[in-house]
Image 1 (cartoon, one colour):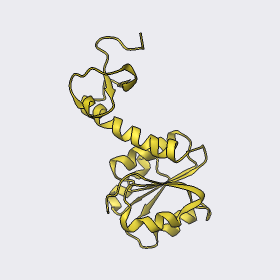
Image 2 (image 1 turned 30 degrees about the vertical axis):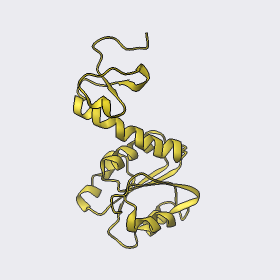
Image 3 (image 1 turned 30 degrees about the horizontal axis):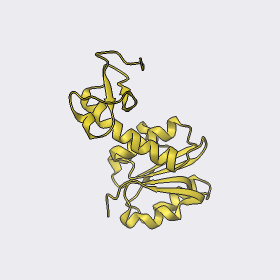
Image 4 (image 1 turned 45 degrees about the horizontal axis):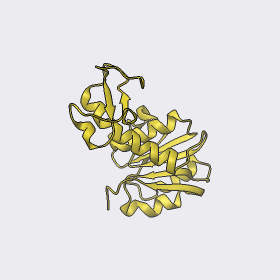
Length: 168
């Protein structure tokens, strides 16, 4: 009665959803969109999708045209977050990575401006790309030594959402 039939491929939330078979409320199940999406990818994607949607939309209050900075953009969470931001109409999506090879691939995931976070002055590039305004939403997956620069590039009334602390 809620749009599911016996045998439908679904993914869910919370740790029990990683099981092969589980009983759950219909509100915690989501159809797996394509036959090509394997079970492992479906199980793993829900955490990233929920986390980044929460960071960008619920906490970050993303609106079309907003500038979004994804600190730690080459991480799985960063890649998911940039795609969500782009799909929801972010004006410019910026992403940091200290790894040149990974940084070179960020455009494939919705990044408009890739920034080398190993460069001490990386925050200047964020300000340049946003005409001095800064990012409306900074999603920080790194923290540690990057925190002060994340604060420096947040726009007036911008939101800084700390998701992870990969560097402490």
